Image (spheres, rainbow, N blue to C red):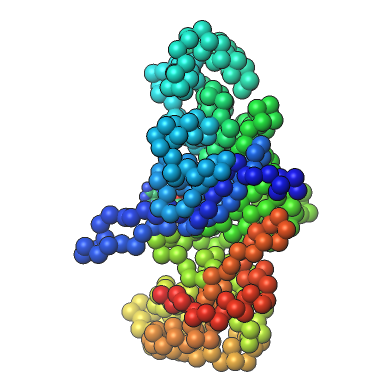
Length: 450
Ligand code: ADP
Ligand code: MG
């Protein structure tokens, strides 16, 4: 809309931050941790934009790299059209006044020996305001604006509640009249009842001061409450960016859908889509190939030539992953199978997998991997059967190959390109235009297997 016609106040391009872990086994140099891996987005004046994603997705790193609190490894950030990576010390000082950051943990951001008034006045002194009366006036005014009283200036951090400390944090950020405030998990440390008070205050201050706000949270409900636009982050990348109302109404990326469906609904008839995200965010030192979300994606695309339901396909893929990772515990599966078929206890105690009838082990493997007794697709069924046989015969490497050869998805082979649809940007093969997908798939499928 009108936002599009403005020049963004902040333009982030290919922002990348890698950490080089020290050490490593036998002096080998470990792979760099790609905490933020090439993100692009714009921030428009007087909007509140949210960055959301599970813990460890790289949100905080993106924020600190964006304002050069930590130097980005690659990338350009333009503030009102000027590249901040070129800024000299003076320009950087002015930029750091214009862009304030409020950190997650209010405790670590206050010096316990400094009164509240002094804490709020500190940035004013740093910026060279010598007039003490003027400073006190500003502090009193700010305290009122964040819902506290001027007399609170004499108090100390330990006398304050979490919510009050967050108010002080906001007052201190506002002291130097910033253009942009970045809030990293602004309410995560607070009780839910206090959270909404602080979120309301943030919105009120945003209007009052015409602020641009970048709000970071792992909690989608927080983002939904205060943001005009949202950027969804997964494992160092942005997977979907768009207008908040629109994005929450029709999420396009399966990760966004999964995050949304995890929000408890106050309406008991509507319990969301019931999608749960299995496991944790993978290691950013060794991210999955193709679409980084494919290892956890509830909508990962089945191979074209196999007719499998999404649910069965997910189970097959998950099973393949476990075989590949070597996390299928055959011995305990054989033990359970042995009990099922009624083998006697003495035999079970020192059991060899081959002692148990392989059909019983396979049945048990299917049960605990949510694999049906038979797959609807004949080819897929034969392949799976073969792999299960190989596995129970101890030919794990062969089973691994059988599964990898037949059960493969475009999601793991090809990195999805970023697609713009109106105000929305999505990076997911489900949304890649067919012609574009075709051209991408013709490239060698680099990184298909580790
Ligand atoms: P978020 O804020 O989304 O929870 P972070 O930006 O804190 O995520 O971290 C992203 C990833 O980068 C995590 O895997 C984290 O372990 C890693 N990371 C963050 N800071 C460092 C650091 N100083 N050294 C090495 N790895 C780091
Ligand atoms: Mg963080």
